[in-house]
Image (cartoon, rainbow, N blue to C red):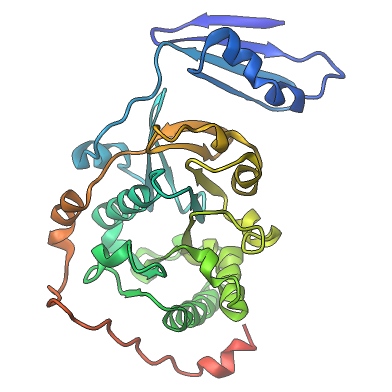
Length: 338
């Protein structure tokens, strides 16, 4: 049983599987559809009903347009602008889909995506968000110095930030308990704390930092209701870092080109990211309510600096040292309590 609908840009086929046919076999044999209809297809479905969209052309590369992006994310509390799929802009609210994993090989578009995501958050939600950045490769987040609360490059400094966030989460939990509420957004507007976003580039470098990873895992487990969110990135997915608990809490995944199907499955749970070609820079597989192909916007460093200049609190002199973290009271005592 099937239904065919012709739209201006695609042909859509909805078909129902007969009882007894394993739906996993449909995805495993997606190459049959590509051989028949070409590469410009999207296949989605669950246990019974599948939808095949056959498009006239592939998604195209495009530059970051701040006006268009602001229009696309209007009304979202903590907006993530992903890019464009064949059906238009892809955006979502991090308060509804907490915690993001961005993964992809060098040159695939991961770094540009992080630049775009954080620039959008600063420009559209900066007045209700505290941003913390950990640039463990010392290459990506220098752009956000003077805008983020802290930009650190070493694990001990990041540990201090995580300790501070955990302490703040406990205070927020106490406030919610006293108010009899389940989420910070339910608090009266004047009493709502700002959202906290912790962005960590190349989180795989922390896999030997067990205490630190435990703190990150705790944020992923309980942060949503408390208004605390993670953006984690890595070049090569590491199953030791993305263990079951942390991986399951990263509800959204952006998978750029991966070297092989095994790595793609670590990130996505499926092998599509290994099919992205080296020439398709900025192309990703977005896992959010299913998996779809998306082209991320291209935002170069000079343009990002220009867009962010009005949000920079203090112009840092050349050669300025990274600021020391503020002392955190009772950190040592609270490690074992939280």
